[in-house]
Amino acid sequence: GDSVTQMEGPVTLSEEACLTINCTYTATGYPSLFWYVQYPGEGLQLLLKATKADDKGSNKGFEATYRKETTSFHLEKGSVQVSDSAVYFCALTLYLNRDDKIIFGKGTRLHILP
Amino acid sequence: GAGVSQSPRYKVAKRGQDVALRCDPISGHVSLFWYQQALGQGPEFLTYFQNEAQLDKSGLPSDRFFAERPEGSVSTLKIQRTQQEDSAVYLCASSLVSTAVINNEQFFGPGTRLTVL
Image (cartoon, rainbow over all chains, first blue to last red; front, side):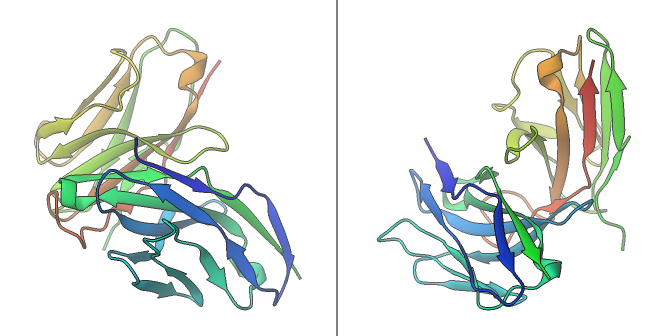
């Protein structure tokens, strides 16, 4: 079935370090890919998305590129801040299959130390 | 404008009790989704409404779970005879249009944390 696998956390980094959170997917159709973020005490928010191969989604200094050949959508940031501490979820939908439900990975907790 | 709201934010139930969780979507949003998020896990799809029609309930874990959206706006998720394994955060999301639209972003509410003792 359709699924998302992301690296397990927690991930602990110092401020200004480089971040990569790996994400791979399995999909029966042609998925759209997302990263959602859940800050402490807040609801899920869309961070970035990409809807076709080789698209790059970006927001708040984060980037992820839709790689169809490796079925991956890794999240990257060049210099993290304490305020980036949160749980990050990789996700997909199959809009083209007329299926809007979001399939999420298990989440990766990120701690940034000052 | 207001986002998606959910109530109550926290609910403690004794095993065997019935509970009702409410979701107020963004005004005018056609689609409404319910997800269940167990501790330390990602959200998992429960059910989907387009206006008042429940088009997909494939994620409901048992017949103790029931959802409705009678007037195409507010939705209620009801769990009968709650069990400890029902303890989770229940998330509601709404989106402006119906399926198969690529930029159809879902907006999430803060969730209801259900604890079954």
